[in-house]
Length: 446
Image: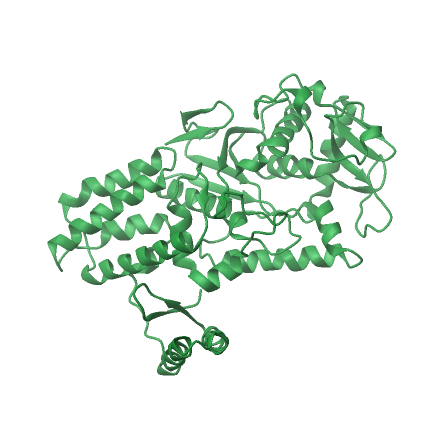
């Protein structure tokens, strides 16, 4: 297994801290709204990476956190309760990602539940003078860490922490960043600390939680490329300064999800599609296959055309599965199966792996009806798509009838009625999808 390490900017053999074990921490969402498809990309990537590593024989612990204390949550809540908003959006996040059918991470820590560990780490940084307190705020001295900027390859003098003008007059250096923020009027959550009542900054929570759950020097730290600076740079500096060691052995960053104009999908830009909406429109299988279709380090364009292509690929796999029989696959196809897993072992290159899988399917189709499905089932299993080979349950006639009525409404141009009927189909536990070339497909909702 080889992985690209952002820290060294090279593909390196995976050498784990403990033989046969892998600890992965991936940064999860800030829950001030429902997550969008871009937020789901790292969840999918690192869940699938875990599945592959388990297949390769590793014992894997995957941690994906939830940031439920943050300025964005306060701003979104307005005069309402930020605590209630965070709780509701956390529940929505769990429900939406459950529908991806990838299983849950081994740990999903909430920042609000790890305040004691956060306070302890800030105390260590204060005692060692890597941090300083001013009027209840606590800031990290970036120039106290000689290696600060190494991960993101940035000069300290050129760094902007993105904290705006708030607290700028209290900082010793403009590049310093907040570890703790003093309680302000109107904020409805705060905790006691030796330096004053308040709440944690964004970066310290991940250092504290990852150290507690995986230990200092765990194997893989992941997240979106947009987190490289300042978030991951600051995490690395905090742990180095507080614990005397590197936080993680490898840093993995996934590329951004871009919309048609090339901008990344982002709540702040208003160009998002929520994960639950995407699942309703495209279905779980097409969405997972779409997210696996690009190499994790590359940007991926989101739109109707690539999702339609993914849906067509799902239908093609299902069709291939109907021609297979249960049992061992022919040994002549074994090299394609091996090429698939070799590609995943080479920096988790899913596009090359899928190319080998499609070649396997072509060869199997050419051979006819007696090919065993074991190889394809194994390949799809790593991508959590083995369900595509399961016998398909037929929709009840009542649901099929609704789908036909929807087709008639669409043909008549009555799209309001068509949407109303789609709602009835979904309420009955089914998803209707228009297929290329006309017609429709009914599948059970995840």
